[in-house]
Image 1 (tube, rainbow over the protein chains, first blue to last red):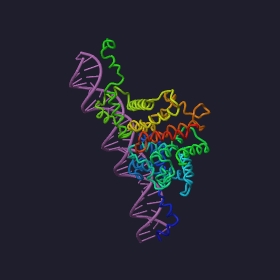
Image 2: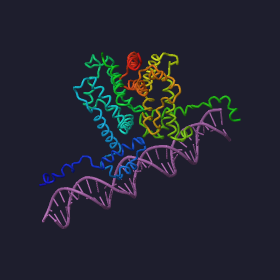
Image 3: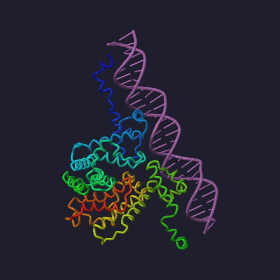
Length: 199
Length: 199
DNA sequence: CAGAATAGATCGAACGTTCATTCTAGTCGA
DNA sequence: TCGACTAGAATGAACGTTCGATCTATTCTG
């Protein structure tokens, strides 16, 4: 009958992400990266995405919501790259190095996404919640990177200082103009680890 | 006649920064920090600064130029704070610690300026030149913070890695939600120095 | 299977608003 | 009276959004 009869196509029909929707998100990401948050008009978006001005509002209730959707997409990519090759039973040192290298890879290979994020985070769109920690997976990863007296393996600096050292470091390293070899990245990460880990 | 006749006021006339001009710049900074680059209309700016819509264009040729002027102002403040108490004949370690603490102070005490900078740097206003190094003073300060084999005092990591470690670190430390005591900041800076300096 | 019906996707012109900028007329102190 | 200033109206461009029409594909009916 109906449900069973359409079995072949059922999967395709429920296709959450129509090609158009996808194209719109993609084009908006490009547009914002290229021309900035202001100066990313719907008219241009329409032209670039190959969608008409009207149909965009079929997929997204407003420009703001569209931008938020782009953000969610980018965030998903970021988290995926960051946690690649990580498992909960790694030793803290290895986890740290893995994370550092993943971070570096993300910043290097997803420049569009990074640039978008930088713009988004410093905008009134988000009320300053920088998307760290809000993800339960990320929280687990960071569990060990805390001062020893709180059960972690690091020197007894304030937790926030530890966070700044670990996160901010790789981040700014990756943002440098020049690219580094995987080996250099690893050496830098080791240097940092030596600086913050106990014994 | 004109120029000479106004002798009494000559100083004031040449006053680069009339009160009005100052008020406009100040209000624009506030406005952008509060409501973002987009959504900072001239009408609101006029109201806030106490200047009429028209006279703004007496001081600045366009909105873009006005924003650029705000940027120059902010940059000046930043450099002033950063170099406070620094002199060329300090030992590298002391210079580093001084710089770190100054950085921290700037990020903590000039939140508006920091927030504006973050927004400006990630916008098409500036073509990505992040305002470091372009200042000759800053260049001198950073002279010693280079790998040993290049005449500096730091470990033999790539120059760019060193830069990322030094600049990015204090920066992200200062951006943390919590405030730290001067002593903690110093301890963190020392930790970092231990990590990157030779011997 | 033919054909009517339905629902969703798509279009592009048009609307109403807001914005940066200009302009006019007037105020006030020197 | 002059020059710096004000309030605010006028302008034209650009913007986000809406709307009715059309087009497409699936489902229902017989």
